[in-house]
Amino acid sequence: MTRQSTYGYFWRPIPGVAPALMDAVYRRQEKGHLCPRIFQSHWVIDYSITDYGRYTVGPRSKQWRERPPRVVHLYPPNTPYAEDLRHARTPIGDAYVVFSGGDAVGLRPLIRRPHRFARFLDPNGRIEALLQRAAWIGQTEGETGFWKAQAALCDIIAALLHSQHVSDETY
Image (cartoon, rainbow, N blue to C red; front, side):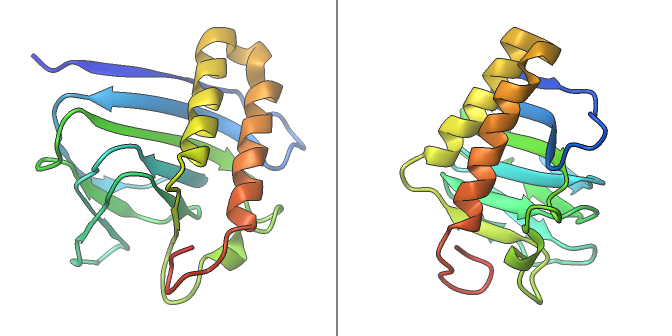
């Protein structure tokens, strides 16, 4: 039997708000699987809490890379990516937010060519704590918790925007 612990919430879009949090999830699962194609029409901040197996980014990419704990991936809208968690140590933990308005707050320049995404190291778990907060607010407060969870998203975005570039797609 597979045990999974997930919490979070999906908010209805609020017209005129940018950025606007749409989905916040925090989860742990006992069994890894292959996610062959993930595709969102909005911005995604995806976080590996634990060893997260391997990933690849792009429509035809065959280059799989290891994804260690405490790494943030920022995907702009319409960026296909895949995750292979079949060989990751369990329990496997991840968190993510889906939101609109990333261009309006200046996230696009963080995506350096030829890379289709940006990668951020989070050794102290600061981003994880904010993602967990947004998901927990959604779980416990639902729609009425939008602005509290939105504040956590804004803190995450501020941290990403103030990150130091290390190399290639990594900050």
